[in-house]
Length: 316
Ligand SMILES: Nc1ncnc2c1ncn2[C@@H]1O[C@H](COP(=O)(O)OP(=O)(O)OP(=O)(O)O)[C@@H](O)[C@H]1O
Ligand SMILES: [Mg+2]
Image (cartoon, rainbow, N blue to C red):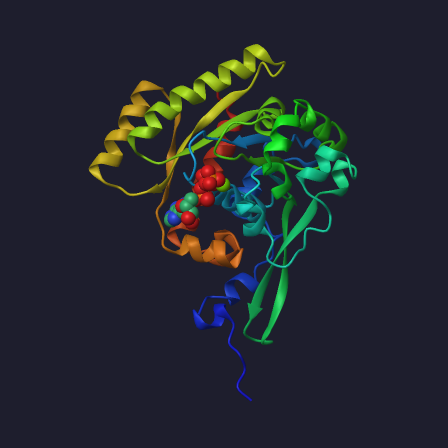
């Protein structure tokens, strides 16, 4: 009988490298980190909360969050992803085989369950050509999934709980090395609550003229949170160019922003890669799907730089 081929096997994808990967094995980078007093020692784990935020939609936020989580997980860090966008892009990127039965952001808001009971572990479903079966692949990623219920106008009108995530982290304790918020591409009170609970903002951007205005808006947001709420230490960790193509125009935009806001631009860029939509469709971040791909190296380099900036205490 003819066996139906999976989408993955049709594409002749390098499964073995993924299936044989031991997620607990530390990379040289992770080993180096284990001597890092801020981020490396589990007994002194400090959860760093980072909002991936931009008031412009479609600039690669969700793609960056899912893949940064993948890179962090692969280098031995535990990471919690909170999907605040009712579209649920990051949730579907990270939930190949897990259902969302644990709960969603909406349940956190309505206090259906305790926050820590809403978080679900993320594992990916990989095809093993040896056994001709799909196998679960565990990760160090946990997810608080998005909910479409938070997109209704009634909900927006009624939600006013600015301290939601501050309380959430108090309850959660220091269970994770990093928490990444995927924020929607527009301001709302849930995003506000995430910014109030965050240590840093990372702003994904395209290298176009909109990004210049976007950085001004970003700095205004940081200032507003610092002056109008009790999160007086919120920092912009940096702007990262996504979907990047190394053209003369892109370089001019990067240079202009780098000169105008010293140190704000991440040295790493995430190149535009045709494999990204495929990885999103399959729901497997690049670090697990295609570890050797160029864009995977971009995500890993960005992740290293992000950690280095946190370690060096970036101020702006
Ligand atoms: N590095 C990349 N290479 C190619 N395509 C990319 C890359 N990054 C993102 N994309 C594509 O760009 C589109 C927007 O990406 P994404 O959904 O991550 O943006 P977003 O900022 O989260 O959008 P929204 O504001 O709607 O939440 C998607 O179709 C995604 O597949
Ligand atoms: Mg998104």
